[in-house]
Amino acid sequence: MSLKRIFFTLILSLSFFLPLAASAQVDIGLEYGAETGLGYSDPRVTAAQIIRNVLGVLGIVTTCIMLYAGFKWMTAGGNEEDVNTAKKMISSAVIGLVIIMSAYSITLFVISRLAKATTGTTIRTP
Image (cartoon, rainbow, N blue to C red; front, side, top):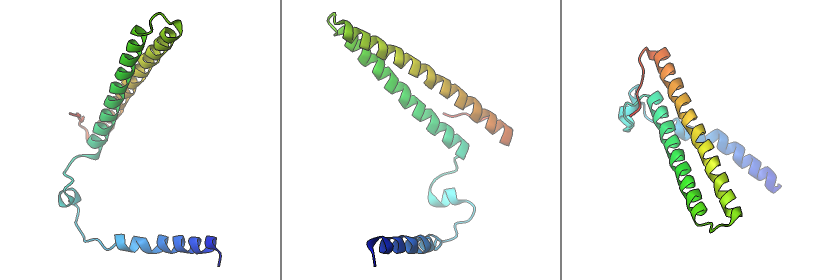
């Protein structure tokens, strides 16, 4: 028997038998958040918090790039090539910051409208 055939048979067998172990869990009912220790957080609020945190990290990265470009410009020592590189980095960082802020605004708008449409109330992310 070839190695490919053995590998294929093994993968096929595992794909049928591994889900059996997952179906052996106990019935935890409808309040699975409390039973598993995950809490009662609304998934929409959790998604909004994750998006907000990711965009916050991107804003910090953009600010660091701008600081590095400013440092590079100040230490260029009159070298036009380094000055031009720093200027391009600063302009790219500003464009990136505008995109990040726009993405944050659009995301906040969409999440709040989605929450209002489904529950009738707006959600606020801390």
